Length: 272
Image (tube, rainbow, N blue to C red; front, side, top):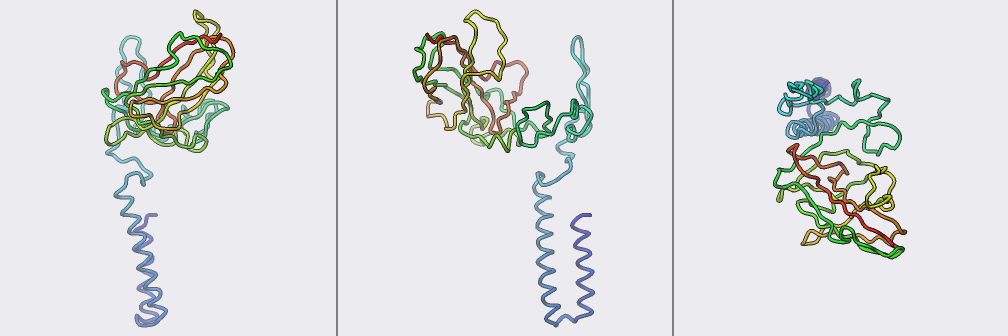
């Protein structure tokens, strides 16, 4: 039952007590004050919910995307899209969302088995505002001495860096946001270093086997540069260094067009 029902019940009690106690009695004046205070709070909360759609627990017709209710008229090798009449708002408790005993992510990283995340992707930057980056140092194919600290510098464009939430409590738990002034994604970047067999190797790397992983906590400088130190360097070997750009809640950044390049950069170095 909604707040209007509650106000009606309180109002009925108010008028009953008014008749029973008399409007000038101290007890009634105290009850009257409490009633008006309670009603004011209820009305205020109800008004806030009406003004802020984020307070509602149901889908607004204004947010409904009819394309989600169509398989997309696939042609050739295309497959039909999964469909939903309600923007997939309950996907994580559907048959597909519960497949293989998937758990609802709920802000926590999932290390054991599949998970489902019901939070919207959120804002998507325009094609002229997509993030992109290049490594400034080391340079691709550089040779570095083993066991010696070196600095990795990445130049980033179109990403408001230095914004990251608690990855243990808010992982993927909020939509991607855009900076209101630049319309760039608000987020952060990481540096990942993985060892490879050789420069000519086509071995598929395990994404969770890396020699170095670190997020860049601070914002980029005026030239868009961020840097990290790899303390004590790396053992002798061949390595791939990659960037990993993400939004504030650690989610991948979506693009407005299917045909685009990568947001990230990769280089290879030899340590010997």
